[in-house]
Amino acid sequence: IRGVRIGYANGLNEARVNTKANNPNAKPQYSCVFFVPDADQAAIKAIQAAMWAAASAKFGDKAQVKWAQVHANNKIPFKSGALHPDREGYAGNMFLQANAKAEQPPKLLDIYEDAPGSGRPMVLARPQNRIYSGAVVNIEVNFFDPGVTHRGVHAPRVALVLDVLEESVELGREVRLDHDHVAAHVDEVIDVL
Image (cartoon, rainbow, N blue to C red; front, side):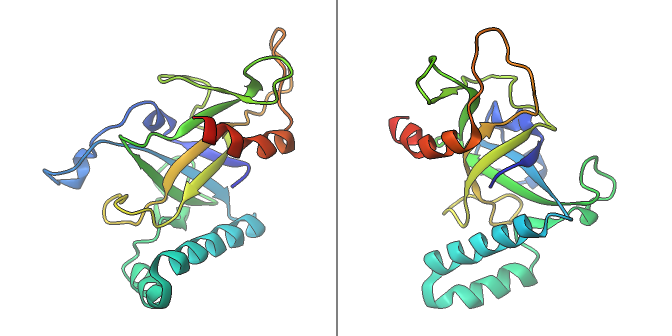
């Protein structure tokens, strides 16, 4: 998913137990929220289509029933920000709650090359401060990943966050990567990691 704004980005630096879940067996998870403007109907439809495709792949013939159950119980991870009018950043947006198990931390990649001319994004070590709440990022999520839930919601697993900060100035001798060029190398980078 390209060009989404991230919220609660500090949840990508450290896996934490959700104390609000009141679950004594809760395990640490990485988590964050991604925002898509209500006006970006193309992105919203693409995310909904990806969710349906993932449900179909995971549940096969039972996908329609599972899809109806998840929607009826409001356990979908992609919802209207109008549900949280008191939270900053939610108004006028759809939001996607995403998590990752502590054993499967999301890959955090920068928009700068790891070495001049390599074409590979720099891997960010935790803790980091390049990806922050409010930044615009490209993400890769896996919908209906087994065992990843947040308060009963089938939260997608965050697999990759590629920092695409809205900066127009090159810093020192660092070279910013072209977004299309990076997209061609992301799978290669994930394989290496």
